[in-house]
Every structure is written in C-alpha cells, then in structure tokens.
Image (cartoon, rainbow, N blue to C red):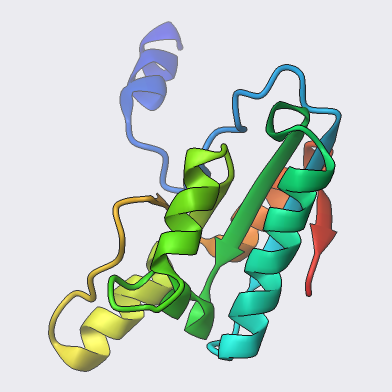
Length: 143
C-alpha cells in the first residue's frame, strides 16, 4: 500500500496543471480577469482594468491575474501591439496566463506551434485556472 502511494506521488499528475497562487502576502484584493476573445477593444479594456487596479491599490496590495484562452491568447503573441503594456503590468506584479489547450489546438490546425511572449505563464486549461483562482478567494471579472 505504501509503495503504491509513493508511485502515485511520483507519477505526473494527469489532470490539468494550474499555476500556483501568486506570492503576494500583503494582497488585500485578488482579481482574475478573463480574456476569451480577440477583440482589440476587449484587450484594451482588460489591460485598462488591470492598470487602474494597480494604480488604485498599491501593487503589493492587489493580486491580478489575467487568464487568456481561446482567441484571447492573441493578446500574448509577440506581434500584439499591447505587448509593452502587458510586460509593464507583469513588471508591476500582474500575471498573464495562457491556455496551453488553445496553443495545442492552434498547433494542430496550423502545423506549427504559435509563439507567445515570455511574460506569459502557461497553464494547461485556462478555464480550470479561473476556477482554481475563484475557489481560492479571487473575484472573477469579465470586462
């Protein structure tokens, strides 16, 4: 029985992997922003909300996580005109998650893996990451 438990513990988890919770011990507010479309206005709105929250609260007092999946991952492509804003928010402590299920689907369709910026944190399933965050005290906002 103990050997089976050790083997199970050593085996990779077959379920979707979530990014761990942000290490922000003084965060009084935790927000997850969902981005699931490739509308430039929606991208701008998500970035504006994140930026405004950083300004309103001290960046150490707010944990902001943007989860991009489906067409929303276009925000995290190297050629996206909002790249500098994303990188600026990451430098202030926000996190941008990219759904690997979406990336894998695009790779199957195009025959090559799409590139995304290094500031993006890969998660296996974007919606599972949102669920994980909301179950851990984050408030979901879908601008």
